[in-house]
Structures are given as C-alpha cells and as structure tokens.
Image (cartoon, rainbow over the protein chains, first blue to last red):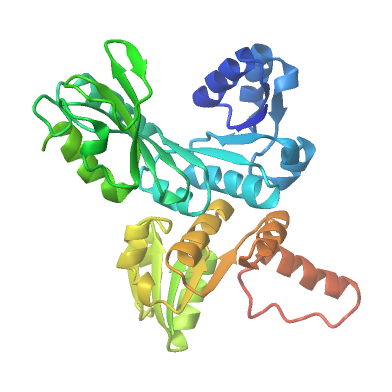
Length: 220
Length: 144
C-alpha cells in the first residue's frame, strides 16, 4: 500500500517507522526543514517530503492520486481536516484517517467524510479507563458518517449477558458483537455463542444503541 | 438579514461594522475577547467569544437562524472548516469563505465553497491598472 502521512511530529514519525517495517510504501510530509532533516536521517530520504501538506501543489508532486491512504497527524485539527478533504474530494483517495485533538470535532470530521478519526485525548482517556477497576464500555474508534463506533467492554457478573446466548440478549439491529476474548482465546461469535462474566467483547454500535449495549454488558 | 461573521481581524471587523451600519443583524465570533472589543461602541451587533469551528459556539451565536455565514479569519484552514460546518452540518445556504491562498481558493471553489480571495481580487485589480485599463478606486477598500 502507498500511505502518505502528513505531519512529521512524534506521532507521524513513529507511525511512519512502523509502517515502513510492515513494508508499506510510506511518505511522511513535513513542512519544517529542521524536522524534515531529522526524519530523513531516521527514515531515509525516499520516505520524507519537505513541504506543506495543506498545499495542493505538494499533493500533486507526491502523487496523491495513487495513494491508498492518507493519514493526517498534525497537531492542528483544522489542518488535518483540510488535508483529508483535499485527499478525499479532490484526489479521490479511498481512505482518509485524521488525528483530532478536540474530541468534539469527531462528529464534524465523520459528517464531512473523513473515514476514521483517532482522538488523542480519547485514546489516553480510554487507556486510563481500562487501567481503572471501574466497569465501563470504552470507546475505541469512530467510523465514517458518524454512523458507528467500535467499543470494548467486559461482561459483568450478573449482567443480562452473563450466561446467555447472544441471540437472546435483545441487542439492537444496529449493534453487533464482533469478537469475544475469553482467557486469552479469541472467539468469533455467532448468535449461539454463550457469553460469560469476564469475557471481553468488542462490538460495533450506533451511538443511539450504545446505551442499550452498555446495560446488556454491564447490567446497569 | 441575520449574518454571522467568524474572525474579528481587519477584514472581519471592518465587514461587521459595514454590515451592521446597513441595518443587518450581525454577530461576530472570535476567540480573542480584545479583538471583539476593538469593534467599539459604534457596533450595534452581538459578539460571541469562542472557536468559530465549534458547533456549540456557533449555536450560541444563533447560527440556526442565520441567513448568511462569513468565515473571515486570517487562517485559510480554519475558514474552510468553519464553512463546511455551517454548510453541511447547519445547512446554511449562503456561506462565504475567505481564502488568502489563490490555489486553495480555486480548489475549494471547485469543491463547492463560495470563495472570496482577497489576494486574487487585489492582484486582478492591480493587473487591470497595469494593462492600462481604468484603475478602480481602492480608497473604499482599505482591506487589501
């Protein structure tokens, strides 16, 4: 895959490095010459482009129209939005991913057609939530069109889900349990799968059905 | 008309005073309280402190009743984002976007925004002078 990363800060650098290790074709776009020099030393000159990622002439020069994905990870939400809008609407890039700093912008980005948003603030919050012994449904990812999000939770003892089959739980049509982790084993669930207290589940859900799902899994 | 202007710099504040003097109901949004204060006692409209890309702030500014939305900050990308929020989330029909970068102005015009580019306008006006055509009077347009 040809992946373009715009923004060569900490996030862009480590992302670029790890995608290169997975043998993708990667180009990191950075406008600060000093930072770009550091990136060239670390990633190699073939994988760094000195230029403004919000500037469409940069995009023409780096062949944005053949990119499989554009990932905008600058520290500025407005810049990340404009990068994704240009990639999507002007150059027809199939997949656009944006880092957002203000979680409230997630809805706007999704509404405007950015495929995936990753909120730094929410990721940190989710990590902390996981570390705390409080049962909760943790938000992992918001997907396009404000339609669905990926959430994670642990089946609480005595909850409606404890000891029952998925098909009997009354999960709304716009929510789906997609993975169950039980004692380090991963189960792809069917309607007949019986859930048990302690199971960690991954589910996709619309924002409206999140509350219903929460009650089924956590029992409150 | 109810008009919302985001950005109270040179263009935004000048425009706000101009339009409110014409009798329009104008609300100006800016993150900088002092910029809003610079409108002075002459300004008859409302001011809201906050980010012009934030839905909550725009609601407070009364965007749901607005007839016209103008994104006039000095930052092209902020103006683009604010304009799309107004246009595609609040469904405001009349949205005007200030973009200084001529290239970006051209692209986002083609992507459906109603773009005004001060740089392009000034360059074209100057070009006309150069071509020996009658030079338009710039005295009324202090803002570039």
